[in-house]
Length: 289
Image (cartoon, rainbow, N blue to C red):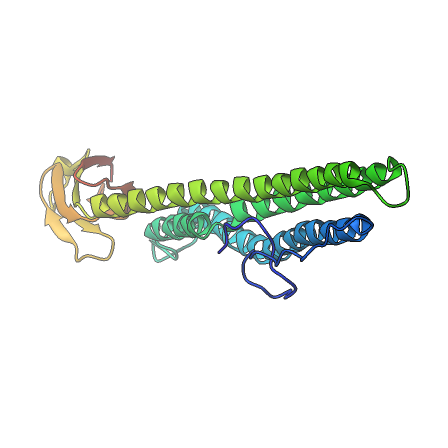
């Protein structure tokens, strides 16, 4: 399983970190050196394969994280530009791009960020890179310590006490590798739990957003218009209003475009304004023809 603290045997395409087979050793007098070499090969192999696993696995997470985060940044920027473009570019007094699309763009950006967190792409890339580098540093330090230990032998072949000291070095190094992998796995588990909580929160917010809201529209000179004024929201058919105020109910919580037209001072006038409607709330907007 993924949270095991040793590396896969020899398959470079292995999906998870898996335990390697511990070598069979002979501790007969005169064979300590050969046994220690096999121990050295085993522990450095475990660490080396763990480094390789993290370095390989971080690449797709890096690419995926960049794609999701980059797309989220573009969607957010687009959401900010849409209302401006709607005011700058019009056809017959109607915006070419409806301001309500900015809400869609923001929703897409939020979904992309949430997916990145749920899949553990950006954070996983950072975790894997840090874990791989840390194990690699410890591996290099262990190799130097091992050679230093061999220099301390009284003879070319170590005695039992010297062999025992080398085994302790190998054991301590393996525990360090296990600790790094365990720490990375705990970080993954913690982030996954947080991602689940964020997903649940987003689902609750989505349910909350389904609650409808309303807009009260006040035309400051509405009572001065003998023919009244026409009110429409988004692409709805216009309503003729006489007086200064009107209400529009049962609106979804997002940005809506309020459009008012009427004959003022002998000329046909038209004005529109994007209005953000919140769930369960009444939003007031004031216009003048």
